[in-house]
Image 1 (spheres, helix red, strand yellow):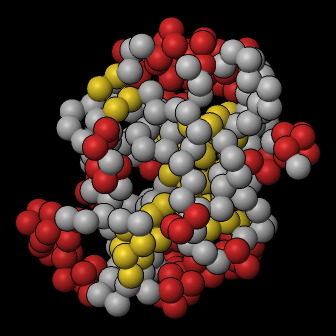
Image 2 (cartoon, rainbow, N blue to C red; image 1 turned 30 degrees about the vertical axis):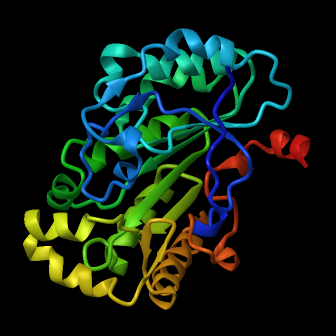
Length: 293
């Protein structure tokens, strides 16, 4: 029994260094974000399922591992979705991982993450929190069961105040919804003011069936979004924006991030020339990078 490796799809422009990845929950994440890509994978369809066996299996997973590569929680489901408060699977995994010296890469959109500050201080940790908009009305539409954006910023500040590297993920950038310069700058300027170190951004990449779902449930936004992607291309089961459009959007985000003296990286976009660092925050685990190379 081993820690699962993160699935790095080079064809989809993933540039992550090797790392491990744990999803403490299966099924559809309770946050219910309309842009979620996880239903592309059979294990992340249907009702959410806590992986209670991980609370004991994690001990065996970390045995006899030499190079302590970072462990990400998580790529397909939020490790701090509401059920975590009841089951504590994420916390148990973090306890064991930190005891064995693994660096942690946390990706969430929940303010529950501050519960585990005590663990984050025990090992190299980078916390990324997704904030796609500061508009409460838009957030409640596209991320209906996730904590409000202001609560996520409060969590980021608490973590940053403890000296733990923090990242704001503007992910995804959805054309015509949250892609205007004013909205993006509002997020980045607020992030800079509370001590966030980096902005990671990615354009929305619909999975097959998304536009049918959108037309049925949110007809008013279907036409403009569908037309934005009409000249895009399918890569590994995702519909990518036309490269000229995505480059223009990401360059805008980069320019704003640099204006506020933050690092910037695009995630799964294929524009390495825009990046000043690594998208997942691995650069803040510098000792680990030295050992790896």
